[in-house]
Length: 283
Image (tube, rainbow, N blue to C red; front, side, top):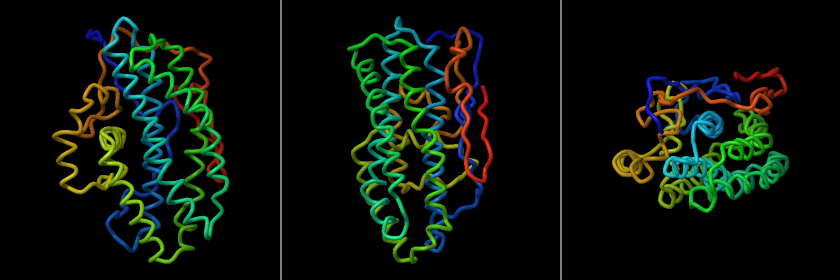
């Protein structure tokens, strides 16, 4: 990447709108507030994915195929987002959350929505994997295209899903049932932390601390490993994240601002939600 005097400070809230976080005082360690902490964690997780999609939108036009090291790192960054969607977030829902909640809530629409963006997610992974592995020349137009195609199916789902697992709906389950669910998710997360070198750095660098200072909930021993080892394994990926590992905004140095196609669907993205009105994106 070039290093001129022109800077761009990334706004991670655009162009796809984020999910409003209505409570910033959620106690993720309090067993008596599991319904609220589960629902808040879901929204916070979805927002990390939305910020990554927005970061891809910002950075894609700033990269050139003349810099294969940069484009390979960017592709790895995009794939860390795909891994978050598929292996860490999607798997825990499909294997653990949906089957348990289906006992008292209707999760069929959620399952169908997951299937609904599978084709676009596969195309996204296929393109960026080929770029990362040097099998395909990077093209910003194609990067933006696969991102927009995935977003057209995924973003609506990310906003709708928290309404199906709100605290009011989770109160249908006993405290013990929610404790068992939380324990199963925790065990799944531990397995993910062991097998993925990108999961925790991704979560940390896509989370706005002001929304929940104590999230993500990570044991201190694991956090030490992430800070001293994890961030260095794929260090080149995280320069594309909206936040640094300390929670500050990333600032990028480039010759010019990104030149996005005016017809890019994300530039005029609207999402209509029941009882929430219309969320209009920033361009």
